[in-house]
Length: 268
Ligand code: ATP
Image (cartoon, rainbow, N blue to C red; front, side, top):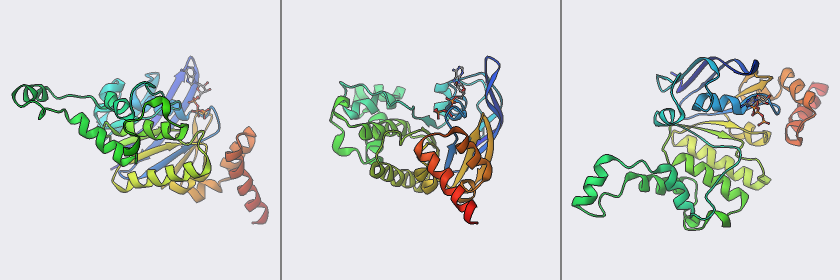
């Protein structure tokens, strides 16, 4: 059974359908790519799944729970987490404290334990923060203030912040934006490592090399609809995908995919 099972999802903003009849599934422990030209509806999809927009029809089931009508916090409690395109950190707080803000979910009994045995009631949020720092390889930056981080480091902290809630599915909205090639490769390795631990990941990105390298399965959106779905190699060669990207004359990274596929078509 799919961990995330989305059926016929439509999101309308003032009569304009930003998502139209989307069917998408994420299996446990897999990395699923969601790509498409600018404005195709990728972030809208993430907003709809995580509860940041309610202008939706259709069915979103996560871990066997129907999410319709639930707000973002309730959805997060079912094991969903997301990142945002622009990573907003508290610049004056350390990396650790930036994560703690997100992980702070003290249990009622930790307050009692604190009264009886001071120190032992440390809420389990602190442990989650430590685990998230380790999973993203950020231990050495834990005490550094947000303001002192490079763009690439901020991206990793944004992901660690999502992981601090210990989700079973994380939706990453363009994590490679602004990263150089080597940072993007490291990010890819990190994403595969998380999947190997059993985490499920929905990856949105314009970095086609990253998407094609790390995803088990890819969905392509254009004008709010799924125009292709399948393993990366098949999607990459799909004529409708090539046409969608050529039509935009878009970013270099996506242009490369279209160019590669056009060259393959010419020779094949
Ligand atoms: P990008 O790759 O540029 O981030 P995207 O594929 O994530 O694009 P969305 O941001 O989901 O695309 O936008 C899809 C469409 O929905 C666009 O036409 C956008 O203008 C519109 N849209 C998105 N959010 C809203 C909103 N809150 N109100 C009205 N229209 C919106």
